[in-house]
Length: 341
Image (tube, rainbow, N blue to C red; front, side, top):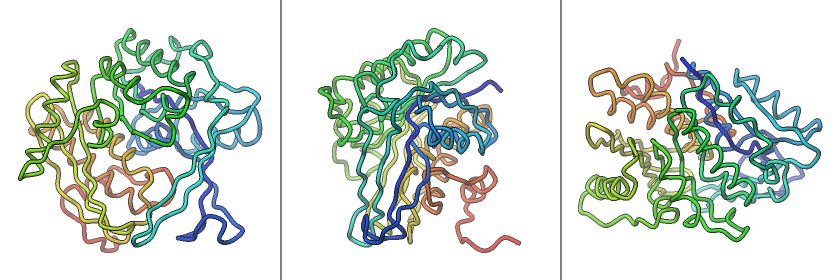
């Protein structure tokens, strides 16, 4: 199968140990991550060929970042320049104390890169799908220009394009708002992935109250489809946050053949929330390419994506280090967690 291209910033993540407050002890756990990189790694682990495109500093940290992503069999195309790498700090929440993310991404090499720094024609050769998230245009004006250019070049090359809205209020600081940028991107894509807050903040389309949540999300998806008729698939995740350690998790999909609701997972003792949406996005991209020829293929694609997102809550770090077999095992109802011998 042809390659899937992903474009976004790869960051160094610095996290306080276990459930400690930041700098409660003089140690931070360091890993690499970022929305599109997380999707790329998941797709590679699921057996697809992923090409991750980014910009990184020309130093040992940038080298380590590239090596880490390549270690998961992801092809990395990286613009390398003098400068700094984007960072984010994570304090993992517990009980009623929420997790906290602090970004330090201003003037990173990625945030300053220009559309002409990327050879889009070469990047999109031998590829069938392009994925980007709303995090990228939130980073800087230059990153937003690169995002728009990449989407248009992908369309010209005939690729299917997916977008995870991924609204991040703490990133939109350079003078533009999500509402100024995201609708124009949505007019150029085929697959939209979001939660209800993303849709409201980025597109200005609210979720209305219905007695049945499924009816509310069906109505939301239909109104998004009416606003952006180019969309072929609209997937919306639903997280019910009871505490930092216990969440409900499910999703909905408006496809070509109908509207579907996934199984609902009650997730206790969360190891990590970060990256669950990216795991869902990767699961959906993979499954839409794998199951659509089967009976109930759209429903199966949604169930696969929801199970992938659920399993990410059991894996520390940004990357969802699970296999297709593990996702299908959960998807098929095996949620006991019993040891496999």
